[in-house]
Length: 100
Image 1 (spheres, rainbow, N blue to C red):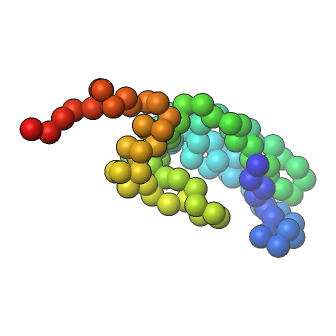
Image 2 (image 1 turned 60 degrees about the vertical axis):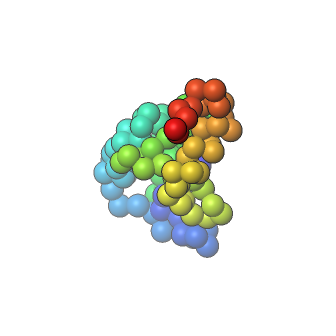
């Protein structure tokens, strides 16, 4: 869950235009590949964005893959993407091309 209109310290500062922020959140979710289903709910001055667990991993945004490291997202390297695909069983050793 991502609260919009709340500071890192937990203070409610609110949002001015709920509809515009809902539209931005939906646009970002649909820009992912594959698109991500999200739920956006108005709770007074705060927007609550819920991202249910997804099963079609990995996801990319604007052609780049990211992974969460602590409180930030880091772009994945080619080797990290490959390792992730192997770990998820999406690529099998016997299906990878060999170099001469």
